[in-house]
Length: 123
Image (cartoon, rainbow, N blue to C red; front, side, top):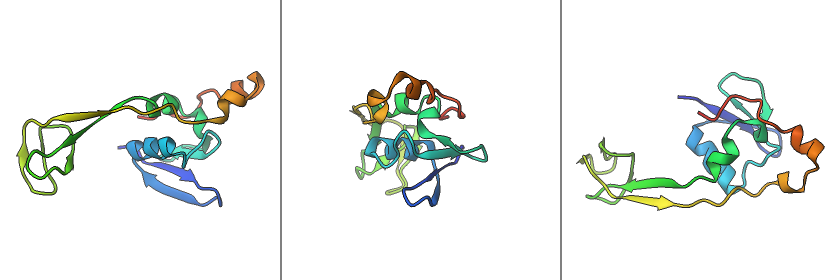
């Protein structure tokens, strides 16, 4: 599984984080288009250059819950880490995400072209 790293506002390297954690950081606004990110050992790139990151952050996600204890679980079939139940079926909840707020809408065409995807894809 890919490991991601990013640089926070003071410039410290943070990570590793999973792809899903990276998406959540974008959704929360912790990572914006200018935040430097890298996948595994690849070179640092601006987040807006990661192919598919902004598109994926705006896509809906499905969360599953254990029918026995209501803990969040992975897509069935799976094993609940909370109550140790063996789960074959569970009801999913669809969560819509708004497109991440970004500076891109204010950028000129020159700046927008400078931020085309160049880094490794999200997955």
